Amino acid sequence: MKRDVFPKTQRTWIDEQLEGGEGGRSSVNRHIMHVYASCLRVWFLGSSYRGKGDAEDVIRGFFADRLAREDFLDRWRASDKRLRHWLINAFHFYLKEQRRASHRQKRWHALPEEIESSSEPPARVIDRAFAESLVQEASEKVLNVCRSKGQESYWKIFLEHHVERIPYRDLGARFGVSAEKAAVMARTAERRFIRTLREFVGRDGTKADEIDREIQALLESIGE
Image (cartoon, rainbow, N blue to C red):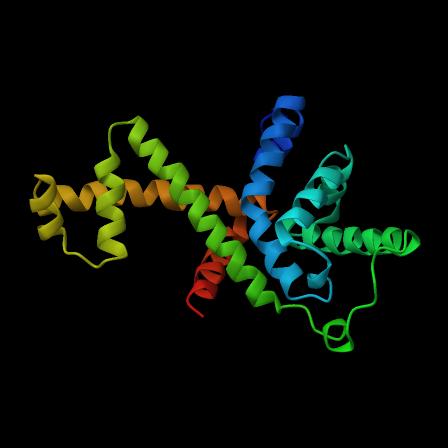
Protein backbone atom coordinates (compact mmCIF):
# COMPACT_ATOMS: atom_id res chain seq x y z
CA MET A 1 0.00 0.00 0.00
CA LYS A 2 1.33 3.41 -0.93
CA ARG A 3 2.35 5.63 1.98
CA ASP A 4 0.30 8.58 0.71
CA VAL A 5 -3.04 6.72 0.65
CA PHE A 6 -3.88 8.26 4.02
CA PRO A 7 -3.67 12.07 4.11
CA LYS A 8 -1.19 13.61 6.50
CA THR A 9 -2.58 15.25 9.60
CA GLN A 10 -2.97 18.97 8.96
CA ARG A 11 -1.01 20.87 11.58
CA THR A 12 -2.35 24.23 12.68
CA TRP A 13 -0.28 27.38 12.59
CA ILE A 14 0.02 27.28 16.37
CA ASP A 15 1.23 23.67 16.28
CA GLU A 16 3.86 24.54 13.71
CA GLN A 17 5.04 27.61 15.61
CA LEU A 18 5.31 25.80 18.94
CA GLU A 19 7.35 23.08 17.30
CA GLY A 20 9.71 25.76 15.97
CA GLY A 21 11.23 26.63 19.35
CA GLU A 22 11.33 29.90 21.26
CA GLY A 23 10.91 32.10 18.21
CA GLY A 24 7.73 30.28 17.26
CA ARG A 25 6.41 30.40 20.81
CA SER A 26 6.99 34.16 20.88
CA SER A 27 4.99 34.53 17.64
CA VAL A 28 2.11 32.56 19.14
CA ASN A 29 2.17 34.63 22.31
CA ARG A 30 2.08 37.88 20.33
CA HIS A 31 -0.85 36.60 18.29
CA ILE A 32 -2.77 35.61 21.41
CA MET A 33 -2.15 38.92 23.15
CA HIS A 34 -3.21 40.92 20.08
CA VAL A 35 -6.35 38.93 19.22
CA TYR A 36 -7.70 37.82 22.60
CA ALA A 37 -7.06 40.76 24.92
CA SER A 38 -10.39 42.35 23.92
CA CYS A 39 -12.33 39.16 24.80
CA LEU A 40 -10.71 39.03 28.22
CA ARG A 41 -11.36 42.73 28.78
CA VAL A 42 -15.07 42.31 27.99
CA TRP A 43 -15.28 39.33 30.33
CA PHE A 44 -13.37 41.10 33.11
CA LEU A 45 -15.47 44.27 32.97
CA GLY A 46 -18.67 42.21 33.10
CA SER A 47 -17.55 40.08 36.03
CA SER A 48 -17.46 40.53 39.80
CA TYR A 49 -13.69 41.09 39.56
CA ARG A 50 -13.95 44.38 37.70
CA GLY A 51 -13.28 46.45 40.80
CA LYS A 52 -9.97 44.74 41.45
CA GLY A 53 -7.76 46.81 39.19
CA ASP A 54 -7.19 48.25 35.76
CA ALA A 55 -8.33 45.77 33.11
CA GLU A 56 -5.25 46.18 30.92
CA ASP A 57 -2.88 45.68 33.86
CA VAL A 58 -4.74 42.58 35.04
CA ILE A 59 -4.79 41.07 31.55
CA ARG A 60 -1.07 41.74 31.07
CA GLY A 61 -0.42 39.98 34.36
CA PHE A 62 -2.48 37.00 33.22
CA PHE A 63 -0.65 36.71 29.91
CA ALA A 64 2.74 37.02 31.62
CA ASP A 65 1.82 34.25 34.04
CA ARG A 66 0.07 31.74 31.81
CA LEU A 67 1.90 32.13 28.51
CA ALA A 68 5.21 31.59 30.31
CA ARG A 69 4.06 28.08 31.23
CA GLU A 70 5.37 25.57 28.70
CA ASP A 71 2.38 23.24 29.04
CA PHE A 72 -0.33 25.92 28.88
CA LEU A 73 -1.02 25.73 25.15
CA ASP A 74 -0.30 22.00 25.05
CA ARG A 75 -3.17 21.49 27.49
CA TRP A 76 -5.40 23.66 25.30
CA ARG A 77 -4.55 21.59 22.23
CA ALA A 78 -5.54 18.44 24.13
CA SER A 79 -8.82 19.99 25.30
CA ASP A 80 -10.64 20.31 21.94
CA LYS A 81 -11.94 23.73 23.05
CA ARG A 82 -12.00 27.03 21.22
CA LEU A 83 -8.94 28.99 22.28
CA ARG A 84 -11.03 31.99 23.37
CA HIS A 85 -13.05 29.75 25.71
CA TRP A 86 -9.90 28.14 27.08
CA LEU A 87 -8.34 31.54 27.75
CA ILE A 88 -11.43 32.87 29.51
CA ASN A 89 -11.56 29.80 31.77
CA ALA A 90 -7.86 30.15 32.53
CA PHE A 91 -8.33 33.89 33.17
CA HIS A 92 -11.10 33.12 35.66
CA PHE A 93 -8.84 30.67 37.52
CA TYR A 94 -6.03 33.24 37.48
CA LEU A 95 -8.28 35.88 39.05
CA LYS A 96 -9.36 33.42 41.74
CA GLU A 97 -5.71 32.72 42.49
CA GLN A 98 -4.96 36.42 42.72
CA ARG A 99 -7.91 36.98 45.04
CA ARG A 100 -6.83 34.15 47.35
CA ALA A 101 -3.26 35.45 47.42
CA SER A 102 -4.43 38.99 48.12
CA HIS A 103 -6.78 37.86 50.86
CA ARG A 104 -3.84 36.17 52.53
CA GLN A 105 -1.92 39.44 52.30
CA LYS A 106 -4.93 41.46 53.56
CA ARG A 107 -4.93 43.66 50.45
CA TRP A 108 -8.26 42.87 48.83
CA HIS A 109 -11.56 43.72 50.52
CA ALA A 110 -14.98 42.23 49.94
CA LEU A 111 -16.82 43.83 47.07
CA PRO A 112 -20.27 45.37 47.52
CA GLU A 113 -23.07 42.84 47.19
CA GLU A 114 -24.43 44.31 43.97
CA ILE A 115 -21.04 43.82 42.28
CA GLU A 116 -20.42 40.37 43.71
CA SER A 117 -23.76 39.19 42.34
CA SER A 118 -23.22 40.59 38.85
CA SER A 119 -23.35 38.06 36.03
CA GLU A 120 -20.74 37.42 33.38
CA PRO A 121 -21.35 38.83 29.89
CA PRO A 122 -23.21 36.39 27.62
CA ALA A 123 -21.30 34.32 25.09
CA ARG A 124 -22.54 36.48 22.19
CA VAL A 125 -20.87 39.53 23.74
CA ILE A 126 -17.60 37.63 24.01
CA ASP A 127 -17.99 36.42 20.43
CA ARG A 128 -18.63 39.97 19.24
CA ALA A 129 -15.42 41.20 20.89
CA PHE A 130 -13.53 38.27 19.37
CA ALA A 131 -15.00 38.90 15.92
CA GLU A 132 -14.16 42.60 16.01
CA SER A 133 -10.60 41.79 17.04
CA LEU A 134 -10.28 39.20 14.26
CA VAL A 135 -11.55 41.62 11.63
CA GLN A 136 -9.11 44.28 12.80
CA GLU A 137 -6.14 41.91 12.83
CA ALA A 138 -7.07 40.41 9.45
CA SER A 139 -7.52 43.89 7.96
CA GLU A 140 -4.09 45.01 9.14
CA LYS A 141 -2.45 41.86 7.82
CA VAL A 142 -4.10 42.08 4.39
CA LEU A 143 -3.34 45.80 4.11
CA ASN A 144 0.32 45.05 4.81
CA VAL A 145 0.33 42.28 2.20
CA CYS A 146 -1.24 44.60 -0.36
CA ARG A 147 1.31 47.30 0.42
CA SER A 148 4.18 44.86 0.06
CA LYS A 149 2.92 44.01 -3.43
CA GLY A 150 2.33 47.62 -4.43
CA GLN A 151 -1.43 47.00 -4.32
CA GLU A 152 -2.65 49.23 -1.51
CA SER A 153 -5.32 50.56 -3.87
CA TYR A 154 -6.78 47.03 -4.05
CA TRP A 155 -7.52 47.13 -0.32
CA LYS A 156 -8.89 50.68 -0.46
CA ILE A 157 -11.26 49.81 -3.31
CA PHE A 158 -12.42 46.64 -1.52
CA LEU A 159 -13.03 48.53 1.71
CA GLU A 160 -14.79 51.50 0.19
CA HIS A 161 -17.02 49.35 -2.02
CA HIS A 162 -18.13 46.99 0.76
CA VAL A 163 -18.18 49.39 3.71
CA GLU A 164 -19.01 52.73 2.12
CA ARG A 165 -21.08 51.16 -0.70
CA ILE A 166 -19.31 53.27 -3.33
CA PRO A 167 -19.92 51.89 -6.87
CA TYR A 168 -16.99 50.44 -8.79
CA ARG A 169 -17.59 53.02 -11.52
CA ASP A 170 -16.87 55.88 -9.10
CA LEU A 171 -13.94 54.07 -7.47
CA GLY A 172 -12.44 53.27 -10.85
CA ALA A 173 -12.60 56.91 -11.87
CA ARG A 174 -10.87 57.94 -8.66
CA PHE A 175 -8.07 55.36 -8.97
CA GLY A 176 -7.63 55.72 -12.72
CA VAL A 177 -8.96 52.29 -13.78
CA SER A 178 -12.11 50.96 -15.38
CA ALA A 179 -15.08 49.81 -13.28
CA GLU A 180 -14.29 46.23 -14.37
CA LYS A 181 -10.68 46.54 -13.24
CA ALA A 182 -11.77 48.07 -9.91
CA ALA A 183 -14.02 45.03 -9.34
CA VAL A 184 -11.14 42.65 -10.06
CA MET A 185 -8.88 44.55 -7.67
CA ALA A 186 -11.52 44.43 -4.92
CA ARG A 187 -12.04 40.68 -5.40
CA THR A 188 -8.30 40.09 -5.07
CA ALA A 189 -8.27 41.92 -1.73
CA GLU A 190 -11.46 40.15 -0.65
CA ARG A 191 -9.96 36.72 -1.31
CA ARG A 192 -6.94 37.64 0.81
CA PHE A 193 -9.20 38.93 3.58
CA ILE A 194 -11.39 35.81 3.67
CA ARG A 195 -8.33 33.56 3.53
CA THR A 196 -6.81 35.44 6.46
CA LEU A 197 -10.04 35.27 8.47
CA ARG A 198 -10.22 31.52 7.84
CA GLU A 199 -6.62 31.18 8.99
CA PHE A 200 -7.28 33.11 12.21
CA VAL A 201 -10.51 31.23 12.99
CA GLY A 202 -8.64 27.97 12.43
CA ARG A 203 -6.05 29.07 14.97
CA ASP A 204 -8.85 29.41 17.52
CA GLY A 205 -9.40 25.65 17.29
CA THR A 206 -12.30 25.50 14.83
CA LYS A 207 -12.33 22.32 12.75
CA ALA A 208 -11.72 22.79 9.03
CA ASP A 209 -15.26 21.83 7.99
CA GLU A 210 -16.75 24.28 10.50
CA ILE A 211 -14.65 27.36 9.72
CA ASP A 212 -17.01 28.98 7.22
CA ARG A 213 -20.00 28.57 9.56
CA GLU A 214 -17.97 29.97 12.43
CA ILE A 215 -16.96 33.02 10.37
CA GLN A 216 -20.58 33.63 9.39
CA ALA A 217 -21.73 33.41 13.02
CA LEU A 218 -18.95 35.71 14.22
CA LEU A 219 -19.61 38.33 11.54
CA GLU A 220 -23.32 38.23 12.34
CA SER A 221 -22.50 38.86 16.01
CA ILE A 222 -20.89 42.19 15.04
CA GLY A 223 -24.17 43.36 13.57
CA GLU A 224 -26.23 42.53 16.67
